[in-house]
Length: 299
Image (cartoon, rainbow, N blue to C red; front, top):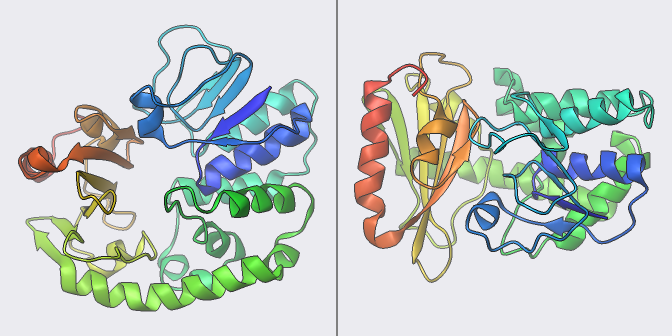
């Protein structure tokens, strides 16, 4: 039995819950959604897949993205919910395998993955331990596997304040605070508000700046959605698109996950992403933007 999950805070918490409920001690298989969608992930019999699209051959599957509806009856749980980790938690509590040990962790995972943040949490994440910790999780060509595994181990048994004092975690948290300060100036320089959509194009920058993904909603309050564009890797053969409904200006009616599923991606109603071939990316970006400009309901 093996855990297959995504390297974000929700995916890491899924792994925490499964490690506790199933006593799994095999290495976690970290995968991004597009690898599942493209058939590039190696799924084995007995795998438990969480926070990712469904793949044939798995033993259990848990997901909450609107674009990842199951092909039919599957073992596990699928529900449009704030987090996949919450689904895993409720599933195993109902089976009597877990108590209330992780209530606080799941509450904060729901808030973070659903982007149910207020303006102070967005502008000052350093005041909110779980939010700050979540911002230390990045995927740069899978270089951080050891760190993701460390967080799984720590979150299983340690209180959040103790986790923040672990030297590697503390170093990364301090780095996030510095990055967020610099990121604000990069957003201001490379973002244009087109109609009611903020479009941030980082393709001219190398390396691509890292920072608070919610900050754009505070800096450009007139926008109802944000689009971030960047190259997927140093070869510049692919372009990554990330889109989110503003968490403060609630005027966006487009179901982002359904929209991006048309372009090989997916996500939630409120946020999602896709990867495009660089040769055709500009044309497809214009098609995506046109839908956001029209702002049809629940496309």
